Picture 1 (cartoon, helix red, strand yellow):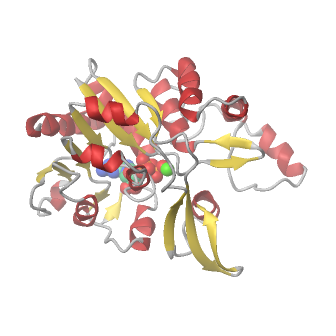
Picture 2 (cartoon, protein in one colour):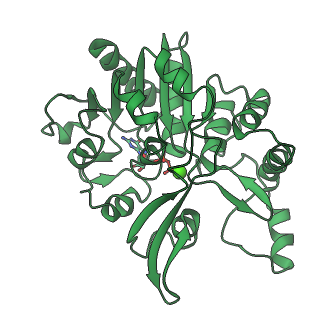
Length: 311
Ligand code: GDP
Ligand code: CA
């Protein structure tokens, strides 16, 4: 069986671990969000691709959900001692090596998709990990604070400001000109089913869907999504701040309406959200908390079973 999954960071990566365990024989292609990517200290950082790669490759900091296990922060402290900005983004010593290699390969002319493949040679994530695009398309957020009304990089709003300043607009700069990375449309075309994990519906899944060509390709497929919202709240993180910014209610119904029936065939919600509905979409209630590897495998198995049933 061929499965395509879109993924942001932590929520997506954890779900994918469950999917690998629920479908050991499947050929899984993951289309990763690169809208969060940022250049720091001259290095290209791809937080969501790395979270997927480290999580599936066994190198993740399990408690935190991002960054490397057994990490130290000597380089960060040395940069800070020079007064180098920004100091609000946590890059660990082990993690730095990934960004040095990525930056060196990009400078040598390799596209991000080939760089990602090279990095995955070490991590063996068990899936084919593709960036949504080799082109630069970065999420920016329009805010008004003491410095006035301005657009800041998504990471500055999310990490430095902890989304505490309301987002007036969230936009993917460069989206119109970006092309899907090599292999993305081919993988969707060849897929038996597509699964949308509980990733951020605005700045992870929503970003991938904005790359021209990806949404129409997905609409031709059997797609099952897992709600990232349970009982009106994001399970963890600040997805509600992103949904509010685009005028969508933070609810399983709100995200279902946002994705829409052209994209979705099935939608998994928590028991307490069992009443949500949309014509043309099969809604099923399941335990949605990825509270243990077993619970996550069960959730992934349920999403896959629904997709197979609907295909
Ligand atoms: P991020 O980089 O941390 O934002 O990771 P993602 O982009 O993958 O999004 C995480 C999203 O998944 C958050 O918006 C949460 O609402 C959702 N989430 C996190 N843990 C769970 C869980 O156990 N179950 C479900 N259904 N959703 C979750
Ligand atoms: Ca993310």
